[in-house]
Image 1 (cartoon, one colour):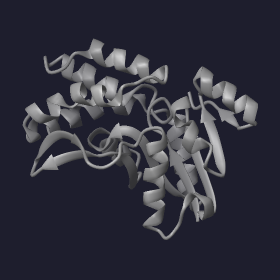
Image 2 (image 1 turned 60 degrees about the horizontal axis):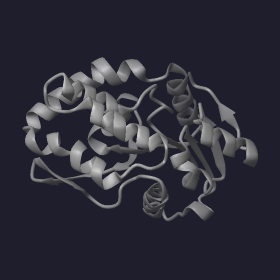
Image 3 (image 1 turned 180 degrees about the vertical axis):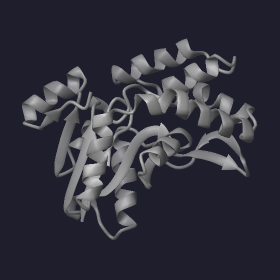
Image 4 (image 1 turned 90 degrees about the vertical axis):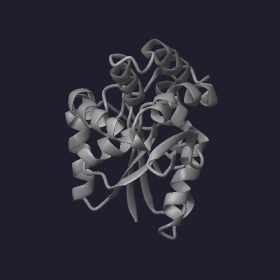
Length: 216
């Protein structure tokens, strides 16, 4: 089996999906974008308090009506997310798919937002942080383990296990990411690729001899 895994934020997308969403909600009086920017800075520094971030970030999902969330997500995707998809990243996804790779998006971003972007990229396999629902409404909690740092390994293993495989015997597995937060998964796959890497990941890639590329 040949697999191509793609991170989302700053890899396929020139930006951060959660931040773009928070800015969109802030314009509608439903979020504080500056608070989300603070969380993003913590993420970049590797010190994000995930529980605190989720408690703040998920509040609008609980308050807003499902039909409002769906309509706003569609507008957000069209006006904010789609224009920031990197053309070279889109080409790379298409090339991998055409070459017979199983293509999946692997992201800490929640499945509500990441799912719409994956749909736009025609990526059918999504491994993302899952939001819990009760009927049609969101509860403000996660369903299962967040797809973050070591959690990405667990979620990818879960995805592979459904195919009777594991990371250590899955064959050719590529993972494209920009972030040092993805070092755990990058260290486990057979073909790690650092895309426009942050300074910490750039240093790690140089030390380990990992390939680097830009999709900007």
